[in-house]
Length: 244
Ligand code: FPP
Image (cartoon, rainbow, N blue to C red; front, side, top):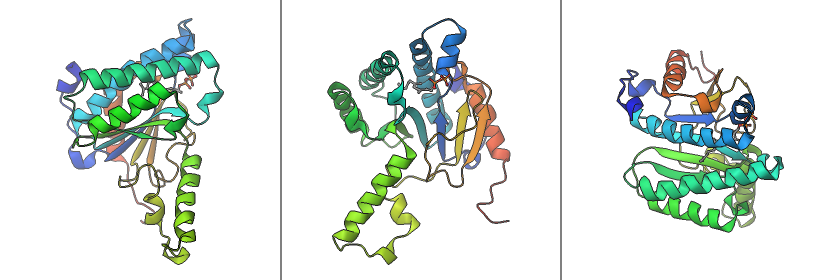
């Protein structure tokens, strides 16, 4: 792939360890071309594959992409159906063609609401990747930050009720360890194409100290060069984590 060969000169310590991407603008991209919204998602899926591999090639350790939110079920059934087909295609391709990629695909969100055949592919993909050592690719599917927090609080409450944890022992770490992203570093940078400047219920706890970059490009038009620009801007940000 041409993009992976180009020299991107940021040293690894200047890269976000954990990058989050809200893949936004697929619908607008399609509408601008007089196409159905699903065509935007198809184009977006191709960009997702390219960018995920690019991130892995430049040394990003954790990448989380927002593929389907808990709120996306309210879209027209044709659009939801088209997204389900795309997810299946991507996972089938990953299982068939990407065996040599050292990318550890992981799913965050309540995947139990997806059709049974998609759930099976999700489980198979996670299983095939289990021992990979390369970039962790979290695909957020039926994910919502608030739902994730409620799930975490329930897990903690169960431990308290069972007498294995005392309320005064609950720390930030206890909560982090109860999230879908347990064991992973907090997100350093959230990048949102399409010009929108919202978090939209994405990684609410994990983004406490994240930098946010909004870019005026629709996701299906997004390129590795756009990502390089965002990463360069991130490298110039002064992160103080509440200090001075
Ligand atoms: C937001 O754009 C995008 C989505 C709700 C779906 C994102 C999904 C993909 C890119 C498909 C590929 C993913 C995988 C894991 C294969 P929007 O539809 O809200 O765009 P709009 O704001 O322009 O309407």
